[in-house]
Image (cartoon, rainbow, N blue to C red):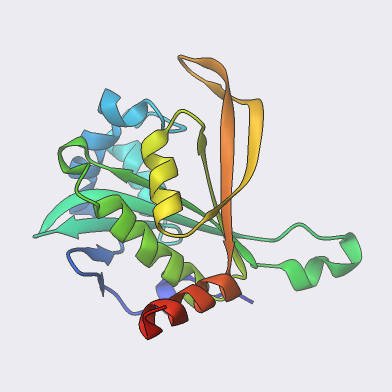
Length: 194
């Protein structure tokens, strides 16, 4: 059974970034990039107000902010849910999967912050006890696809005209995933130089 983000020690540090639960004073910075057309183009929802961003990120369950040198440069989402199961096995599937999401402020893109943050998010998800992570994007979102590939997620599905994009209409979407034991194996190879 999985634990919650609140069960972990915060903040988390990577080589250049600090990941932590969001604070009320972060919401203006998050709203600024989440309402920017360069960001909203691929997001599933446009942040119409600071209050809306706060309601989503400050739930204490799924959201994290990403800082670089004391500045909020992005945010992360980790949503733990039940794995698909037959009814008789449903109890064993509780809290076994996590969906990942992220957004990086336009001024901070192209510097590897998204990859660095999502790599740590995958580690966090597996520390919570999930057995599988997945992330989805529109097929045209090449930046998100590159992040998923760089952190080691595998392309598991390409859905044809499955997602309705507000400007592009019905569009292809991609699903990437990774199992906990694959992440452990990958981490061991990196440590041993393999």
